[in-house]
Structures are given as C-alpha cells and as structure tokens.
Amino acid sequence: MLIGEYIHTVDEKNRISLPSKFRKEMGKSVVITPGLDKCLFVFTLKEWGKVSKRLSDSDSDLSFLSADKRTFNRFMFGRAVEVDVDSIGRVLIPDFLKERAGLEAKAAVVGVEDRVEIWNEKAWLVYRQKAEKEADALAEKLANEKRM
Image (spheres, rainbow, N blue to C red):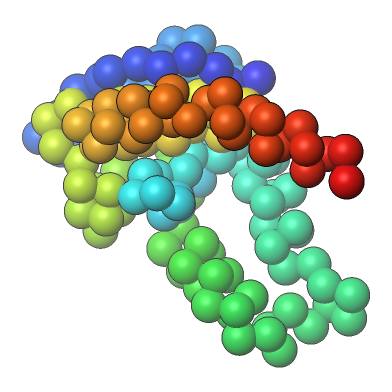
C-alpha cells in the first residue's frame, strides 16, 4: 500500500525522486498519466493494467461507442507514458505532464493506496487544507452512501 506525503525537488532535467518507501512497491518502470485535480497519477505497471481494464470494460466491450468514455480514455491513455525508475529512484516527468500539473522546483509526492500522486507543492497545500476542513462531512456522506 502506498501511503504518506513527501516534498521532493524537481531537478533541472525534470526528474523527481520517488520516496524510498515507494520504490520497493513501484518496481523498475511506472506509468505516469494526467490525474484529476491538476495532479499526476503514477501507477505500477500491474496497477496500470487493472486501471486500463476498468476504463475499457463495458457490457458489450465496445467502450469506444460512448462519447464520454472516448473522451476520458483519450485523456488518461493519450497522455500516459511509461518511464523507467533510475538506479537512485528518480523518474523523468515529460514536459507536457510537468506543465499540466504546474510543477516547479518543489513537488508533493503523495501515496494514495494504489497510486502515487505528484502535485505542485503550493496546490497540494491548498487542496490538503480544504480536504482537512471537509473530512468530517465527507466521512458522514460516504457512510450514508454505503448504507443506501
């Protein structure tokens, strides 16, 4: 399970180190894709396979017939890249993904169970503060949804 929050430097070559606690679970290659909320998602190859299957599944196996599915799949798959984790645990973030997430000199690297998220440090702090204020209400809402 990938958990925890770390602030890491994005170097001049667009590389960022994965926290040592994540490296063992992530393997030698990962998939980086645009995430939601203006962050990047980083998946292990195994987890990316599961995500890919869920995104492309449909009752008729013709998910390309739905405009919403086509659009979202283009967003997730079209800009996804498989990158190697180097010998000291760094991954190279392509320019187009770095720009999309607004990454600067510092980035938040956050473990979210089955994936890692990479955030602009300032955007992460704002998001985290908002989530902390809403946590009790969100927990109640999710508990009520589960009962239905």
